[in-house]
Image (cartoon, rainbow, N blue to C red; front, side):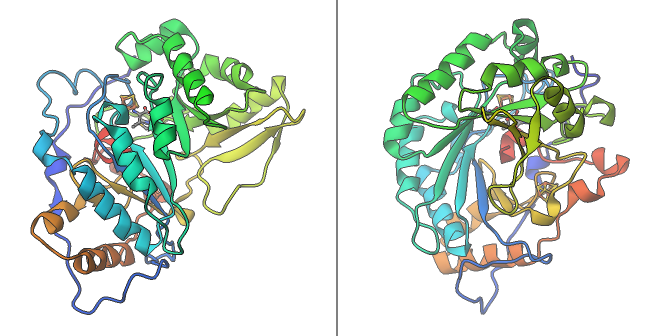
Length: 367
Ligand code: SAM
Ligand code: SF4
Ligand code: SF4
């Protein structure tokens, strides 16, 4: 299904030791990088493992029996994740997304959710706590997540075409079971569930309109994502990308769409509402219309490295600071300095050569 799978050099080993500035200002919720972008979102990969082998993310040929997933001792504990999140919140993080790998493979995830739900933003509000999942285990967990304080859920579903979906997840997982997970989340009280579809030309693009049609009027929001050159293993080529503009045209030809205002500055998905008022879709144009200028996202890997861009080549080892006994003030100061020095804008300046550089895998730093 993919053109070519490239063996990966283990980019996880590329680590930077954070510097702790001598006289840091106290975190004030307004931490800006070199381009004036505030730190507002944190994505945390709670496990690098997954029960799917989506061809565009964890191709079987690379993530096979010999692949070295992180041992348990390398993972951040729930206490460490909560401590980190508290420090990021003091710096201005308002939105938190748990991801992976497949986050539901992390044992007792609802316990972590409960710990995180008790935290507050720098100005005393609850954090916006969300989760991205392939929904394979969602039916049995949705109620516990709701009770623990999870606010929103995003489910990935790449096709309604049984054969195509099974081939894309590459473990023969059926569409019906993902749909059951979505229903269970809805029954547990999650509203406006987002459904992510990564579109790859010649693979699942024939299913775009059917996907929109299936969820139109359901209250759920399908978001069509351009296939990205994350990591180094998915054999990405520009020719495999279906531009969002084309996706909007295809859907609009059957179900007219009107462009809608963003919900907030820096929203990743561009919103399009059905002209008949029956809901909306989103498109995420990470390749054809880069949104680096408003990117406020940081990522924390499964083993506690901070990445300031999805396409980074190395991360800042915050776990090393924690495990060597540094204080909250010292770690917060190190985070402040890293973000202050951030210059990332990969998608704006992507070149053929950059596509071929060794980048960190998405399952490890979180999508
Ligand atoms: N396992 C969970 C899931 O699939 O929802 C969470 C982790 S997954 C890495 C997060 C999101 O990243 C998913 O919606 C997935 O489709 C998306 N993703 C992974 N690889 C991608 C790629 N190469 N291009 C675009 N999106 C990708
Ligand atoms: Fe697993 Fe999600 Fe990656 Fe698919 S996209 S392989 S479900 S982590
Ligand atoms: Fe943000 Fe990096 Fe993506 Fe640009 S390429 S939007 S800086 S994560």
